[in-house]
Amino acid sequence: VLDDGSVGGWENPGPVAGSWTEYGYGFKGDDLVPATRATFNGATPRHYAFRFWSIRNKQDAGKFLESDDCNKMS
Image (cartoon, rainbow, N blue to C red):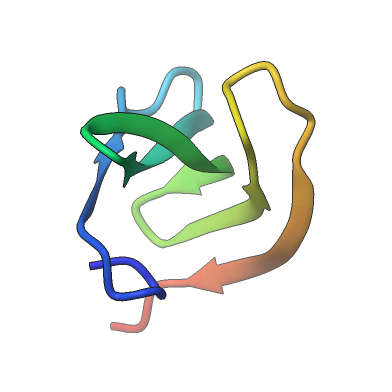
């Protein structure tokens, strides 16, 4: 469920060389359209960093929303 209460989904191809891009989708009428892009870097079993953008399509540079540097707690 997205922030506005609507239903969405994610496309996550998984890591390639420790980084990857994930797209979030929402419904616009009956169509599923890209809504967010997240890039993950430095992924290890104990750490990753991400950046998150609001987008209109996959080619859109987007509006930067947030970033974080995360460590897995044992």
